[in-house]
Image (cartoon, rainbow, N blue to C red; front, side, top):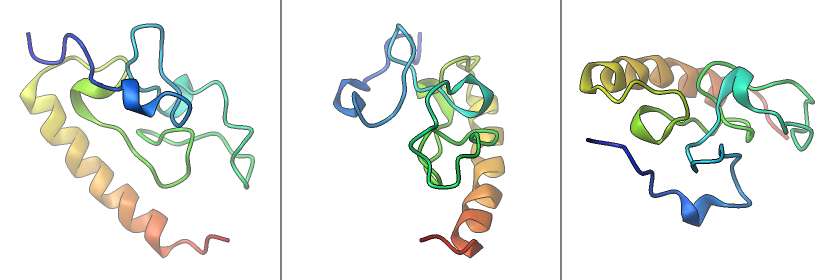
Length: 88
């Protein structure tokens, strides 16, 4: 099964993952105090502002190609918004 085991060990200490090492995004992120704005991540955003996770590596994904395509298209718009926002 595609995405049954994420290859995210190299992200430990950088992004928040669940107990199976899938990346937490949006409302599933519990540690976002390191964000300069103090705001919780939106949608598919990780605990790091402007860093997004989609597809099989994301905690709670349904592991289907069609879902990944949809998530990718949603994140494109979010990336454009992040790039347009003034960041320190």
